[in-house]
Image (cartoon, rainbow, N blue to C red; front, side, top):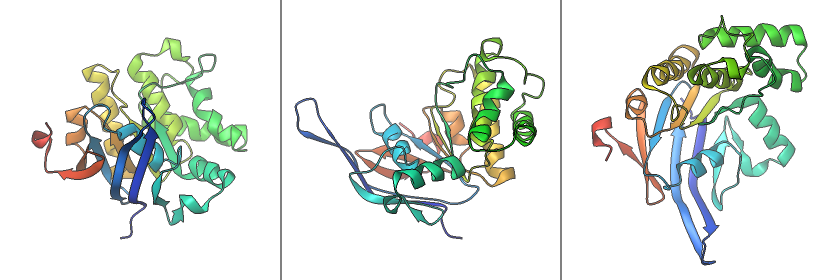
Length: 233
């Protein structure tokens, strides 16, 4: 089976505080297949979020290439990249960024309405995905009326509503207590197993990493396989 996501020779260089170049990523290689759940671990400041942004076409690498479902990011203009992000990628961040004045249902409908889907169809799809993440009874509630775990699961539903091929998550359970983190981890696990959605998660949570098909450590700007959670420093 060919890879859904491929990254080859990825480099990212920033200007350091002293004006000298700072190479955060160097020669990163990664393949992710459909339905695969990959966890990326590493020390704070290692460049994990930077890598996730490059994989999600939110930033461009200094060197190397990324492909998603056969499309090479470097070949795409900004409009085409935006369309690819909207159609094939779902993003989940540590902070949910829900719109406070809208209900959970309206928050999840929003990407579909912006994309041109009719209100009735958008509502039906949003209800389906909110049920998937365990919020069937909380759809009419605004973010302030939801717990932290419910808010984050609502954000996951919003990321999934357009049925992306790949979900990228950056410390998604970083602000959650143990019980809510477990519920969120189960959602990611089910995505990969039951819906064949590829999932790449940057995390410090060893329990979440332990549920992944593969654990990769980012260190000194490169990715390397980790045999098990016990091998994570």
